[in-house]
Image (cartoon, rainbow, N blue to C red; front, top):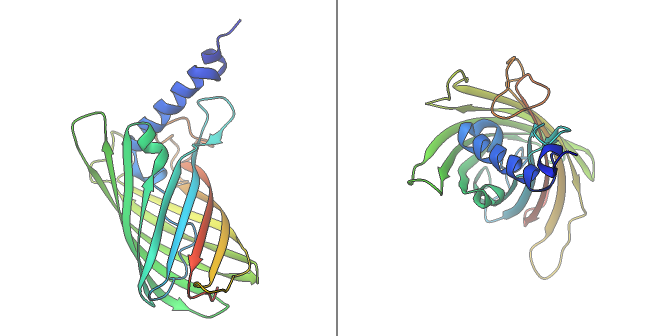
Length: 243
């Protein structure tokens, strides 16, 4: 009879998950650091802010059936100008495996039509470190383009692409990681009261890093070309509701 570890369950499965998370987090920033808000097509506006939590990541098959890595990130953004946001995120699951992962970024609104299409650009710096070894930091700059708009009062579609650079990529890995993405965001009606108006959103976010590469990136990704990822995101936005 096979052991729990051989079957991909129990402590054996947990150890493989932990190993995959550690190898992935330290081996490549492009696929495991997708911790920004899924829908960045609209800035929040001067003086407004947004809090969020995301769960998910690239698919891997080390435990049997391919599933997204269960990475959890928390973060938020703040409007320093009607057209400019600053934001940041922290990896919760990564810290549990001895890896600290965070990012700092800014979004610039390029085009915005109330109730219609919005286009924004983003610049972000990802930071990775290993808490179990001597302090060391790896930096990954990223640029992004984000488009989105409502198709129904309670439903938004968005998409775009990011490009992340690794100055010292792992052996036989690409220095540039391009990640096209697409998502749907379900909006709950905005609430008004004594405090600022607030709006809740739930997004399903799909991404595909370097889909043309006929190679796995870090762990046993599916479908084999590049790295396919899936995330579930929640956000609460306070003030400036016009989405």
